[in-house]
Length: 221
Ligand code: OGA
Ligand code: MN
Image (cartoon, rainbow, N blue to C red):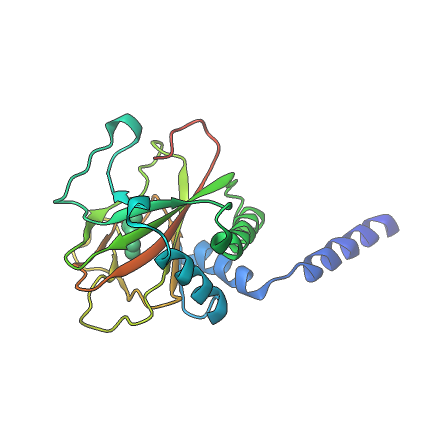
């Protein structure tokens, strides 16, 4: 009996020490509604460093975004017009971002038991006139993407610039959530659950998307 109580105490102590209110809040909302929109997640200097790194990328680093998976990939301009660049930890400006997303992955695994194994991170650039029609990031049983996070990096975004993220529930015609792609706003959602689209953007628009994957041998992208 005594031993049991001591074990309980130790576990509680462990939880308290590692408790991160912000991540716990994210996990809570993912558990109850499947998505969360956050506005003040990252400190401004971190966002600024990220933006500086991104705007320092060369035109050649970007390629036209495709849809479909692996050898079936096709560039279809009537569906999406953004340009993309895959990011990785070896780029020095991405370090803080990857460190945070690793903490998110671990928190989600601990609280929601999603078993997320790794992540892939992609920067998308929408030139004026670009959009991305309604789609799902993952079809149940067809990819290993389980969780999507999108961080917006548009310091001067204003209503009228467009490029909002419209989120839908099932086949509904009207979005239940419109996310303005403001500097530092992040949206996180279950990849298989919410169809979404990027409305026509009239302005340069950057978004940094991560897909967190389970390890089930399915191809990712
Ligand atoms: C995507 C996507 C949304 C956004 O790349 O799959 O839906 O707001 N992006 O950039
Ligand atoms: Mn998407």
